[in-house]
Amino acid sequence: MNRRGLLKLGLAGTVVLAAAGGGAALMLQPGWHDGRLSPAARAMFRSVALAVLDSLVPTEPAARSAALDAWLQRLETTLSALAPATQAELAQICTLLPTAPGRLALAGLGRDWTEATTAEVQSALQALRTSRLAVRQQLFHALRDLSNAAWFADPGTWPAIGYPGPPSV
Image: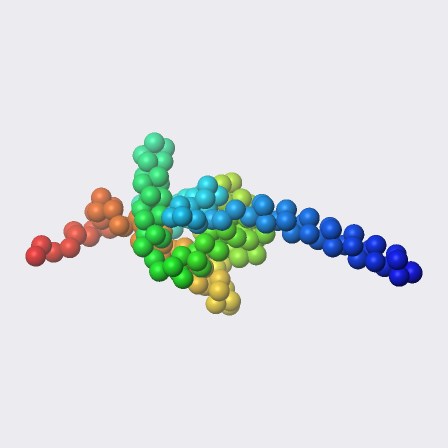
């Protein structure tokens, strides 16, 4: 190959990589921005909540939907109260985990969060919990702890676990 052909190949490769990178950047919407979860991050957290909270979530469809909507509001409030550095880390999780490559690589979940059954999400969470990789274990703990913190921030959820509330002062 002559020098001119090599330069053309290099230029064409640069254009292809720039277009692919720009396309990927456009497709990755921030999962946490200005105190709000993106729709994809909300769907991911909703599936995680159903897997983590399981029998605590109402089974009747309207009550279930209302409880999860209220839970998502409390989750956003909880996330907003975290330190900026922690919010930045969670923003990365909320951006990557809802995508197919992120979901497969980090959680090992083959189906989309909205299509996966509760049992499939529970299995993926269990795999995170027992992983040899510390980052996957940390991801499990973050998802579980955030789900529980936002759920039990509502005093109306306390009777289900027998917690009478804080003592009167």
